[in-house]
Image (tube, rainbow, N blue to C red; front, side):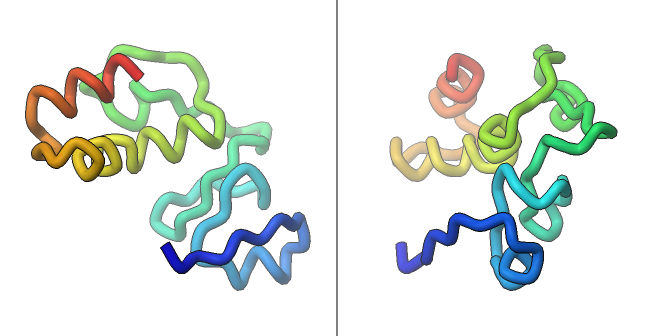
Length: 93
C-alpha cells in the first residue's frame, strides 16, 4: 500500500528495490526478482508447481501470479488460500 513504483533498467537502482518485475535479467523468487528475459529461462507453471498441468513458459506476470496469485485471491475473497474456491479460481485465471 505504501510502495513506490520505480520504472528503470538501471542495475544500481534495481539493486535497491525490494521487488523487481520484468527487468534485471534474473529470476530469483527468494530475492523477489521476477524476470523471464534471460535465454536460460524455461520455467512454466508445472515446473514451479508440479500439481499444475500447464507447461507454457511463464511471462513475468505469470511468475508473479504463480508465486502470489493464491494469496491475493484468498485476501480478496476472504477465503482460505488452500480452500476449494481459491483453488478453482486460481486454476481458471
